[in-house]
Length: 145
Image (cartoon, rainbow, N blue to C red; front, side, top):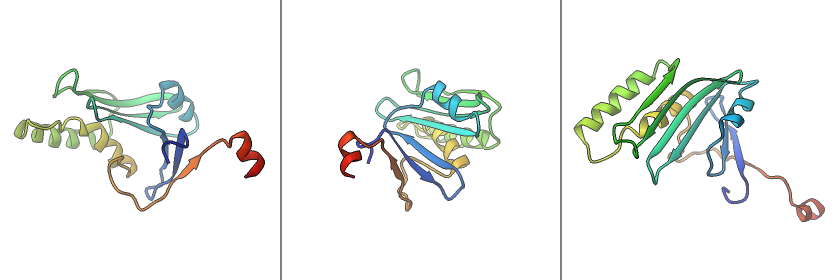
């Protein structure tokens, strides 16, 4: 499904509408445009370099963002803006776990867990839902269905 289209998604049980941009991060310009008429929670995960980011945009403005980049440090965490109420509990739980078990990158999961708490979606969980693929038909698909 990822290979055929740049975009796919669907309605989540939480009421959020999921849009997955292939295997690419949405640019700030794209999220700004999407958030003109809706609240948008964007989450980006790049596991091979252990970078994760979650951000909320509303009315074309970024409300908050949380970023982890293990290339900076295993304990790197940058948080900005009006953070959601659940942020502190998630950060504290995973920071404590990081201190107790320093052989794994638990800080990486802070942005991912925050986005999941808000939207009900995690990229690494098995889902019952199926999502639509948003494909612009090729010339021949348009002709022949």
